[in-house]
Length: 107
Length: 116
Image 1 (cartoon, rainbow over the protein chains, first blue to last red):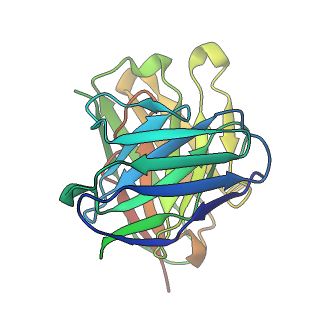
Image 2 (cartoon, chains in turn yellow, green):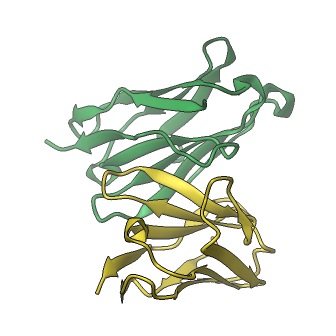
Image 3 (cartoon, one colour):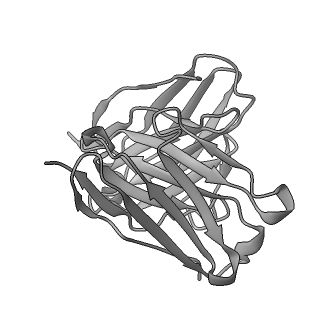
């Protein structure tokens, strides 16, 4: 199985700050990576698919990049609604696997 | 508007069975590859199972942790996907989500608690 190591597990940050979350795969996943946001009420939304394609309606302050085994999600200028949990998912091979999550919290 | 609505969760004893249903609308279900994903109380997400479309012979795939105990199925006439869960274990306790890769949103999830 492909392991996804997501870091940091907790990320304290301030409004307006730029942050980056990392997701490292145990082997190449050929850009087959999505990023998800989960709000405290449990609502899950995909923000980015195929490493860097922004979902419609998702603010442009979100961006994704990476290749091979190393991927990242960046938020250019944090807004209040961005404080949530974030997860990466690889779908290159079965079983699909998730990162362990990053809690983005207000500093 | 795409909708995914999970039902069928609840409290069940270890070793018992439960069947989850995900009713969908707003897209061409018969062509859709559907997944079940679960989230443990520790907030870890785990992919559970996938079922492909009729054109793919309804191929199914499972996580090792549920293989042989869980069965994913679908009824295209009802635009619904199911998860039959047998021989439940306490570690199956989770919120179960139905997902379709064509939508950025998941269902709201349904809680399954396995406890004596």
